Image 1 (cartoon, helix red, strand yellow):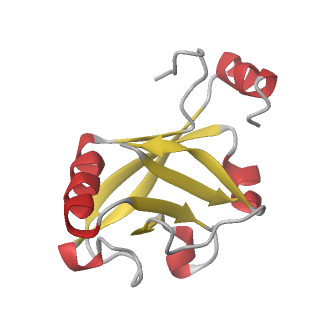
Image 2 (cartoon, rainbow, N blue to C red):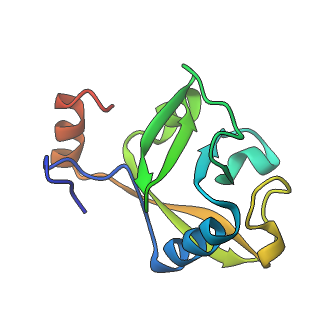
Length: 128
C-alpha cells in the first residue's frame, strides 16, 4: 500500500487488527502503540491509552493505523527500517501492560521487506 505521496506505508494492519483497535477504542478512548524491541513484552507491539506511554527522541513515529499512532524505539527501527510492519492479531496472551490482554488475543507484527524502489522512495523522503 502507498500513500498519496507515493511513499509506502511503514506500518499497516490486517482487518482483524483494525477491528480490535476499534473495539479497544470504544472501551479505552484514543490509543497508541509502541514497540521497544526489548526482550519478552518489549518485543511485541504494546497498545496503551494515548499519552500513557511517554515517547521521546529515542522513538520513531512510523505512522498511524485508524488514527492510532505507532511508535518504535530508534534502535529497533534501525533493524526494521527496510520492512513494512503489518499489525495482526492472534489468539493468546499478550504483554501484561497491553490493553488487548484481557481479550484473549494479542497483537503481533508480521513484516515484508520493501522492494528496492520503495526503499529508494523512503530514503529520498528521509524516512529511513
